[in-house]
Image (spheres, each protein chain N blue to C red):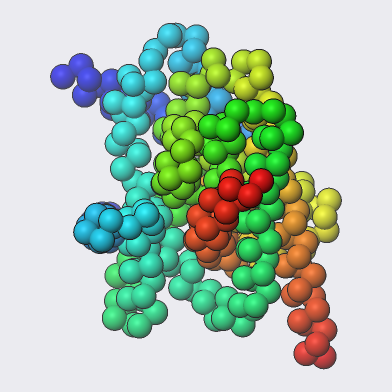
Length: 228
Length: 122
């Protein structure tokens, strides 16, 4: 019974914190007030200070988790709404997604080698740009550590959503299709959430990019792990 | 009534997720079930078998607050804090820099190709 109340309290707490973060972000927009970052950082600090284990947090957290599958399903709708645009620019879009997927795998593996990391770590970092369930299965096949891979996926997602707008500005990337594509290819569903905030076209292209890049990356990772 | 429709529509999304997982399990595919569910829903919408209004309200409700649903997974980082002390922190830096490269490269190339395409129409 007590675990029931722990669960309810966790969900309510997380929801209030999220709403508060949203308000903070609208008052003072910055990468560090982004709801996903601010909420996560506050909860992590709270858990460390109180010594509450992650498992206890997940008594309630698992009920939020079960929505992740249906959310991925629901991304079919923005994709469907903008399908005419995707058809029109199919060539540029597929080249862009391929270039991004290749960059992610190459810089991930090359950087890890440069820093002198062990091979299991290199195998765990290679698939970080794609959505967690796919990254996990790629990493598993490659021989890396799957739970650590999931952490890298989260870091790629949150950092891309936080600083993506700055990078796009520096590189003078203005076309909404190019912008959405960057978010989806680099930062999967978390980047897509950000792209959807920016506009319908950006959101739809981001959905498409996270789906297609997942397919590209699952082919690229084993190839480059073997030859590099 | 509005909430009833919304809950019903979200249940439809759960159903698609479930069917996707069944398909994945049956054919032991490496693509996650949720993604199969998404492609399935997309096909039904595209072929006009399932009208958009059947899921629209539920979808818009979920998509408005996607980041909220990611909180539990991202909080999972807390289990690996000790790994990231010392040399492990370098790998965070690597993941972040590599992500920036992906954004810059894919965006610049796509932006360039789209500009060229528009020009060739003129």
